[in-house]
Length: 585
Image (cartoon, rainbow, N blue to C red; front, side, top):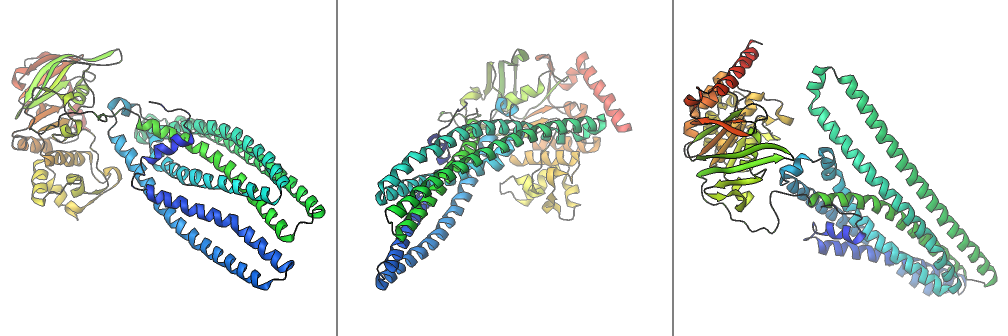
């Protein structure tokens, strides 16, 4: 769902949904700036009265009284300014935090299709930087623009009251600045959209390169990647230079128009000062309001151009929140409160476009059973797991949970019953205990139990800080095998009805794999376990094996029965040889 050409109102309405409990503070912030605007407007008038009283009437008493009012207004303005910026800090932090959390929560719930197409670089920019621009839009472009427009209106009215001809001249000249700012603002918005898209692609490409540095080094492709980086960076720089030049030219043009308007006003003021004998106080008031008007026009024009850039980012954020998630809003679905006892595929098919990956899959697995899914690369194993994980939906047929269609259940309640361990285990910032508990409160006895079952307990205890050992970025202070065993312990910890293990022991040596397998029956008692593996020992430890070939089930049986299947034997003979070669190295 793509949003196009958001208006100021539509952009503000989108951001306001993240400020539901901050509307009063936002209103008070605006009122504070409104009072500040009033102070700015009335101060020159008070000062003009003071000058006239002392110069023309030599009235010290009124001069002192008005001067005292001027002092009070000035002190009030200083205090108000401080309070307004205290409120600004509160709003800035609050809105920014809510936006970032909202975007991250939505990111976690994206459907598989949307997630695969996601530009990771742009997404990081959006959460980290664009949220700040959205806050600035609400505070600077909305609040300050409204008050600057009110200030301009007040200045024109006061100038008109002092001298109608001055007011008329001002009304004629003001639209020149507004028209130019609108024209330049549209150009800046178009450039900002282009810059945002190109920069997002560039950052996404950098993520991919950094992730694949080892492969790049082994392939000897460093120079080629550097040349590509230089080409991309050059393109980004040229685009930035173009935008910066156009912005500078636009700002300079607006400044010159402002100076022309000011010059015309000064010429008329000089003429009337000579011929109409204007008082010094009136001249000072008019000069001040001319400058205030000029400054406010400049601020409105600049703010408008900034707003065009920020609205282009808010458009993209709104588009992001329109992406499909696994949870459809306002959709009434049944919560899965009972234990999962059976998972059944009934004539399930799935395709990526015209490429059929799974076709007419039929099988079931029940509580207490360990099922292995095997097959060559591209046979559909991962897609089948993604169907069970509700990442994808069958395009034909049904996936039944306890005899009911999976699509009838609320996704979040379904995930409460499932845990999974993948080949690449992600360890998050924090301690080992944090990575095992994942925000839940779990006893030390339980952590010890699952770590022993996963064959990692002794290695954790050998560390200086044991379970309180800090995990480095990306888990770099642990080997691949250690990370996999921590991941297995984490899955055991959840005590879920279903455990899915996708190449979860691929990085383990034979001894550690044997330790895990020896404890598997006890850990999985009363659970469903679905295993994808190319490790013969892991597969042979299962109760039943399903073999996929070209998206179809080509064989099914116990591990012993599968020993009579030629495809099965060839698959694991090849893997066995590969394993022997790895061990020799």
